[in-house]
Image 1: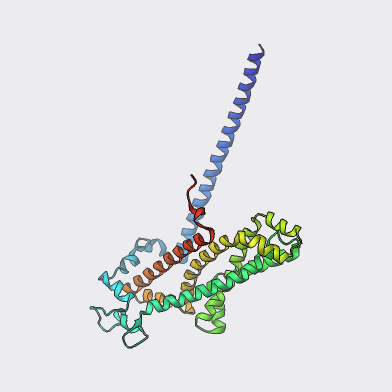
Image 2 (image 1 turned 30 degrees about the vertical axis):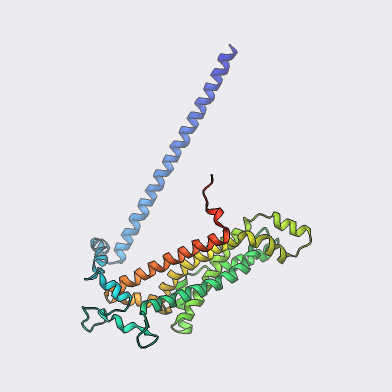
Amino acid sequence: MAMNTLHDGFSEKGALIERHWQELNARRRLYTWLGLAILAMALTGSLWFANETNAGKFFDRLPHLFDFVGDMVPRDGLEVFRALFDLPSPYDDGSFKYNYPEGRLYITESLYVPEYFHKMLETLNIAIFSTVIGMVFGFLLCFLAAKNLVANRLLRGFVRRFMEILRAFPEVVLAGFFLAILSLGPLPAVIAVSIHTVGALGKLFFEVVENADMKAEEGLRAVGASWVERVWFGIVPQVLPNFMSYFLLRLEINVRASTIIGAVGGGGIGELLRLSIGQGHQAKTLAIVLLLLITIIAVDQFSAWLRRRLVGDHAFRLAQ
């Protein structure tokens, strides 16, 4: 009798759990469908707004979306490499479209640097210099923004708000502001990218610091170490590999940002890319895109190599 009562009790509890799970599952499906419906309405409204603001031409032009890609295919695949290395073109008709040798930067009478390599190097210099500045100041500020290192809420809050302000505006907006003040050239680009990088890296850095193991810091505090000594010897060795990963990731991002800023007058290869696209120079455009792709891959591979050197090969081995 007791066994039957116990069995009935388990059955009732099981049925109750099953019913509760079905209710939760039904509610989840309802929320999912509601979310999809809201997303579909928002997408439909956005497309309608785009069509209205483009004088009803948005949907009319939609079938021509890939026409630009087709127009960028050069008449000869080798033209891309001729444009990349400033080699004479057999199709040269005296126009700017095929004037590849015109951009050569001569070192001697016979030795030259191709124009796009020179401009890509300028873009890389902007990105590297800006990222180093952002790394230095982000490094200095991040420890003051970490909860586990600074008890003063006013100081911590001030540093965090300051970094939020620095990263609040996109690089191209900051570049437009400094270009208006300092005129065209790479200097406004460096300032704009550096400001945004300080804010972005500072946030990433202090989040890493807050997740650090505090045992080493507590041991240093117990023997009377100063705040700077506790940070330098107890926290920095733990967070440095992650800092370098974020630094190199930001460098990759800043290469692209410097290219965009170059298109609005900030120097580097971005301006040449804008001109080649606007003038319909297929081979030049593809050559620049190819060079950008190779540069980003090289930065990524360098990042992986440097992180392996910092952390050690054991961190990249599969667990046995």
